[in-house]
Amino acid sequence: MTQREKAQVLDDVALDRALTRIAHEIVEQAAGEEVALVGIKTRGVTLARRIADKIAGIESAKPPVGALDITLYRDDLRLRAEQPVVRGTEIAFPVKGRIVVLVDDVLFTGRTIRAALDALMDLGRPRAIRLAVLIDRGHRELPIRPDYIGKNLPTSRRESVAVMLREHDGSDGVVILEPAT
Amino acid sequence: MAWKRKDLVSMQDVEAAEIRDVLDTAESMREIATREIKKVPTLRGKTVVNLFYEASTRTRTSFEIAGKWLSADVVNFSSSGSSAEKGESLLDTAKNIEAMSPDVVVVRHKASGAPALLARQLKCAVVNAGDGAHEHPTQALLDLLTIRQKKGHLEGLNVTIVGDVAHSRVARSDIHGMRKMGMTVTVAGPPTLIPAACQELGVKVSHRLEEAIAHADVVMMLRLQHERMLAGLIPSLREYARVWGLSLDKLRHCRPDVLIMHPGPVNRGVELAPEVADSQYSVILDQVANGVAVRMAVLFLLAGSAGSAAA
Image (cartoon, helix red, strand yellow):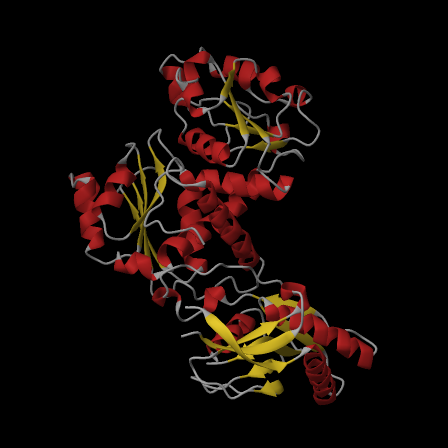
């Protein structure tokens, strides 16, 4: 099924501003406690790195950034005809006792976050886990709620949201796609 | 993702892209071994049966740990003390086990082709954990993973396999796998232990150890089975060790960055001198650690998707 662009939601400037605001909110709420950012692969990791750079500009220290692969924790493995690719988790710091901020690009059903919570808990006992997403598009299937949101975006289920980042796609921006019929 | 197979029976069957899939997946699995809690819930509710008709410590334990770290239920069956001793045929035993709905059956058997037979007859996934002198695919995969980690790549590397190539299922699987990954393979050993039609597999043959190992990036020493001496294929263990054993002295013929590998269990002092087995060149224990990661990858690829249950 091919898709066509319906609307641009964020351009590069707005995307950067949203990340700046999230960084400030994380710093404010952490109130001096040790923070670590954990991005969900692949674009969540890139966003986590950018937020960490912004936090470094606000505070004196840059928080550590980890990468989480949730493939082994998915609840739909046996529903899929093809195996998803396992990309590996790289978290080089102990999560125990820290405030861990999970970072993802789009929050949709909440199932990815459910898997990420399980994956993170297996690595230790964080002091708290918070959730930062660039886009919250609604349609939750689980009781999961983000703490930091770049933009709330009401969508219909048949649409999809594409987050583009210059590290992967050459430029920054968020667009809504709809099926081309 | 190229993996679509129900079973893993031989390296001869699989393609380079599939090998790469397994190695990449295994690379991700290695991280789990470094955790305090070595368990992920991926194969929860899946059952893996280890059906071993031949003695094995490393391979069986490795499959068992791999299954358990992925949260599968692992059941071990060994032929001694079982219905096989009462005369039940392999197929009957397998059909009975299948009636208990396992998702993966891992089989080792002294008869070449036994896993292929089960793969055809059973609905669940079948993994060959060694069949006669035929193949041992997960060993080849863990060897490739170890080499790739140490050298950074596979293509273009020279590998020399030394010893009893004729009776070695490890050698056969390694040769198929390594050739597919673009490596050059030389086999070396006394003529009685090198199959006559060896060149058909695309390998070079050498009958002088010093010459065979001189340009090798990897030297794979095979285990010499004592039965071979009884069968008259070699004059004595001592002579074999002197001519074909890798000693510190002969190691000087190797490149300074050579990797020494062995599928285990090592006959110290026969094919491998103890000082070489414990030297900085030896990656034998890395092979064992990678064995768990490779078997996790194989179980994940075979049992994780809907394909295995529905097939």
